[in-house]
Length: 292
Image 1 (spheres, rainbow, N blue to C red):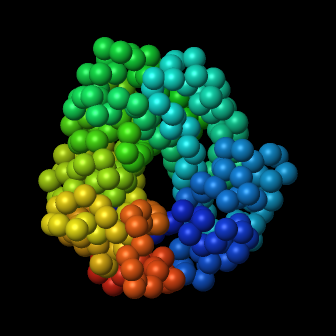
Image 2 (image 1 turned 30 degrees about the vertical axis):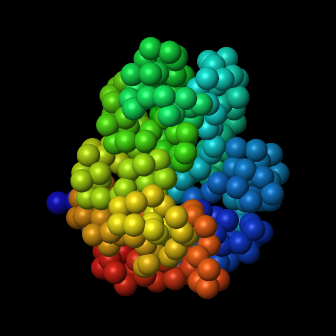
C-alpha cells in the first residue's frame, strides 16, 4: 500500500524576501521542508558562493529544517537559441549546482522544461523537437545523468506561456524520448499547465500520474468554468478541483510532498491577499486529512 501521508513545502520566498526571516516563517507555520529557489542572500540557488552556501546551511540546521528541492531555473531558455547556448548556459552551470546540493542534501534538483518561440505553430512539441532540435533530448539526458550519478533525483517542471509542454501528451512523449524512468520524474505545476491551455482535472492527473514525483499547487480563477486563468486566488477559492485532485494524489502516493506556490493571475479587485499563503496551508491541512 502506498504511504498516503503528505508533507508540505513552499518556495522559500513565500516566507519573506530576507532568507533568515523566511526560514523563521517556515518554523512558525510548521513547514519543515524547504524548496529553495531565489532570494537566498539576494541570489538564486545556483549562484551562491562558498560562504553564502555554508551560511545558508547553518541557518537551515539551526532551525531544524530540511532541504527537499533545489529549484534551479536551468533550461528555461528557448530551444531556438540552439544547442551551444543550452550547453554553455545550463549544462555548464550544473556541476556547481550539484556541488551546492552535496552541502544542502535535497532529494530533488529541478530543471525547467524549455520554452519555444514557435509555441503557436504546432500542437505536438515532441514532434517539432525531433524534426528541428533533436539535440534537446541529448542535452537534457546528459544533465539528468550528471544529477543521478551524484546521488540526487532529477525532476523537470512545466513552465508557463511558451513552454514546450502545453498538453499531457507532449509531456508523456518527451519523457519517453528521454528513456530514463528511474532517473528523472515530473514536477507537475498544475496552474502552469492550465496557463498553457490545459485546465486541471482528474483526467489530466491520471494521464501524468506515472511520471509524477512532485506537485506544485497554486490557486487561480477563470472567468468561465474550465476557461483560461484570469484572477489570482487562494486555493480555497480556486476554480479547479483542488481537494479532489490532491486526495487522489494522496491515495496514489505519487507525491509525498506538495509544494505551495504563489498564484499567478491578476489581483481581483476588493480581495485581501495579505494572508493568502498561510491561508493556503490551513486550507490544505483542513481539507486533506492525509496532510501532516
